[in-house]
Image 1 (spheres, rainbow, N blue to C red):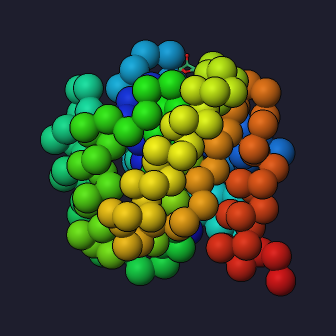
Image 2 (image 1 turned 90 degrees about the vertical axis):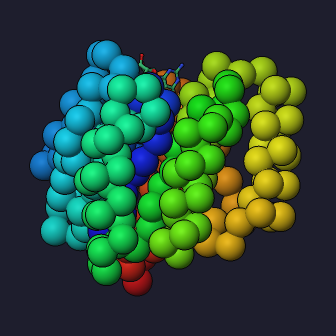
Length: 173
Ligand code: GDP
């Protein structure tokens, strides 16, 4: 099992769709309004693993987030990785920091994914990557030392992230 968390509008549903739309049994709805994903959605990817789409945090759903997500993340034993999405245009925001602290506190193995990289210039992206990389190296314990920059529009980075997910869920053996 892997789960995806991120601020509302960070591009979570689009990313899940880009990653798993090849699996015909996965149906992913992309929300039109920010904060639309209120409940946890579970998707089975074939018989291989389950993807959990968490409600977006920040914006309108802080309570939902604390109640459902924290309880879920704290207790889940078969959760292989948590993918924490950060918008590459704006970088790590206050609410992202809260989610990072939560992952650290629960000692979850997590990975930072930079979304919407098609929206930034190469220079801006490089600046964000270096800055976040430095933060990850200095301030985190449970975060995977490699960032995954992706775009759900151009599919840049999607293949690598798919391979990584296959690997952490034991589907490359
Ligand atoms: P969620 O609230 O985190 O599930 O975000 P959505 O997947 O619904 O996306 C929020 C908005 O960002 C939508 O208007 C998407 O079309 C847009 N979006 C999502 N991913 C990308 C991306 O990789 N590139 C660009 N340019 N826009 C994106």
